Length: 368
Figure 1 (cartoon, rainbow, N blue to C red):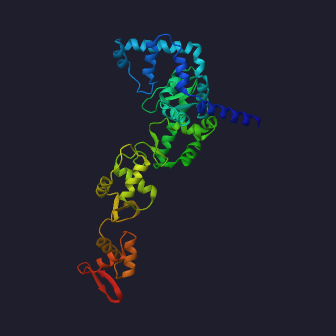
Figure 2: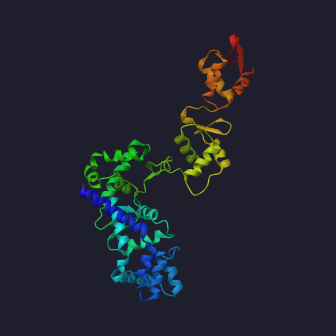
Figure 3: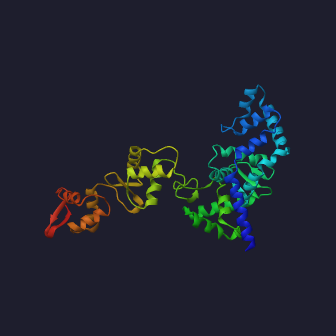
């Protein structure tokens, strides 16, 4: 009980560091101790500490009339100077908070995820991301893991084991390949946790927060806007175009939708920064055999059992399948399973004597 109270107090203290302290103020207090103005300017520009885009070695070199190699040397020596300075104590509270945050996430987090978590707690800052990255770079408490073909750039505590994360990611990807379908977050973490080859790793991680942190490092495993996990080449996880996005929207809603509503949902879910256009969505869905136009501007998925064709085609198909005269009300009922139209439209269609023949007791059959 006492240990739990201590942990809660520690967590509250670290969260207060984020809420109460300004990274910009702390970093500039540290930078003010630099004796050489050019060194300070180079650090500010290289790391984007002034809120502007980070500048390259070449860009800075042109500004000062020196080589890019010289800029690199100044950057490296200035970072060493800052690490050894007395003013480095100014960033200790934020180092503590970053260390605590990493420890809560398995001691390893992708850079974007880590910075994002900090930004959520620093809403009064305008350029927190670059400031947080600078603290991570400057501190001796953290180690960075370079981006590669399988993993995103990550940060960890000293002695963090990236191989443990790689093993978990590899087995998670294998499970997805075998199941060949997306999973909700709860079901996905349960699937991984139950893997007999990961018993020891799961014991060490201790919670899903750490597990998800590892999974977020993967480039192959991704999640869609509906928080479903899968492989990055699956259309349901990373839809490439309007058609795939519409497919995901319809599948998640499990019912036919007007192209206007499909477009709205695509844009609201934020599949990409580019906004979908209603007319483009309509035009694209007409061309794709996965979608069936079941009403005026209303689309359904073919895999739900909907058939292609007009109301005439649907009636013909129903009568052909039954191979016997059917009552008007039965025909209407069956057509409405396939098309979202008014009953009167079906009745009028039945009047086409070239296709349908009315027989005794108000029943219809295919015309001979």
